Image (cartoon, rainbow, N blue to C red; front, side):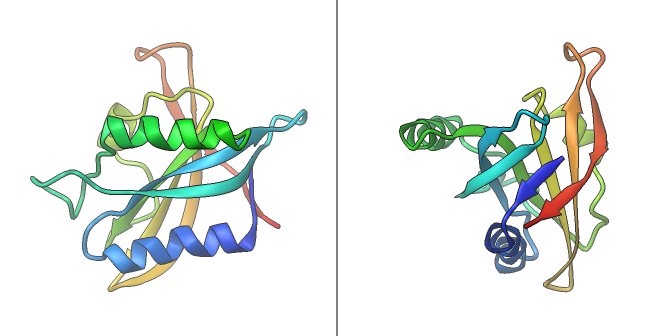
Length: 144
């Protein structure tokens, strides 16, 4: 389960609206709870560095990701997930999303943005032991 506050939930959805018709992307920072839930304590917007197809693909620059991770650790936070938007497309993962997901045990949040308005937000956990058996499975979002 992914737990996040209303302000973080609203912020990642607004990010998708602001970057429409391109995909937005960002990082979820927080902690793992004893009950297995991931609790978001902050989010970090990232720039989408994809220039070939930013309306249906995203990429976070590795240098930016390292900076976000370092700043999070200074606050006692870990990377617990990622988010991005699907402009005029369902809030479901694509084969590309699965192929480019590599952070096992993390949440992958997708918001469908239709005609510039955030409509539906879903979360998926990346499970498996390696690249050959990884899966994105539905994950409950609890907005607190």
